[in-house]
Length: 275
Image 1 (tube, rainbow, N blue to C red):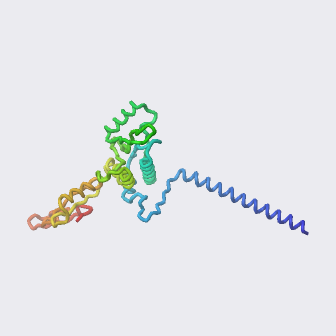
Image 2: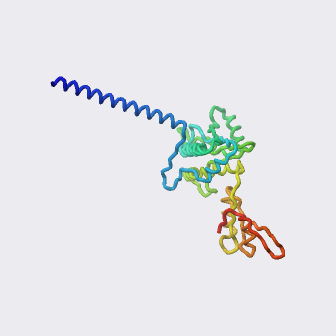
Image 3: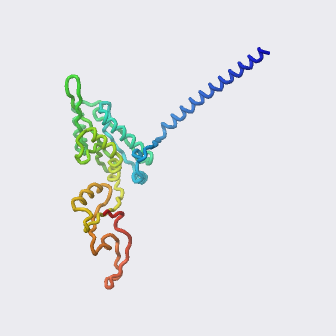
């Protein structure tokens, strides 16, 4: 009787080991399958409250309206990049991956201009990029025999149909930032703005029309000018003086009777009025 129980226990133990082994292999198979699937899909979950790592609705709309390929050559690449610029390069790649998730018309490549070229060839490459609007930037590093200076190109060229424009990835906030760490950090924060702006400009997508209201002490001329320059890349900017002609100033007006002064409003001239 004891022997029979031992045999049953052995069978149960063997069965449990077999089940555990099968479960182990099933988990391995699932993980391999998920890894294969993830290599074909780009999924980025933004868990921050302010959604700082999610592209905006306006950018998504712009990407979905692309009617042809926008090709972006990013020259910020290579093993010799300083840590902060390497992070800027990585964030740029992540942003372009996310943009490509919303449009098949986004294509890009990363290029190390110094790879496999002689110093003379590199100077020629830098000269060509400079003539196209990109600015090679000197980087100094401490080495055993002293300070070494080499150049990187924190920028890209954007192509669309027959057009080509430069894209600066480094943004110093109009010179307000002086420290390199602050500049690179700010550039990462403005990546979507700067990349999206370049795509909008080269594809000639229609901009919304906005107008600043003037005439009642809302803003000074200098303040209006500064604000208009800041948003002019994304919007068609105008100004409207608040006076007796306010109707014709902000509405599309069709005059029906010049004698009696009858008119009809045919919609707003602007998408937004800024006070």
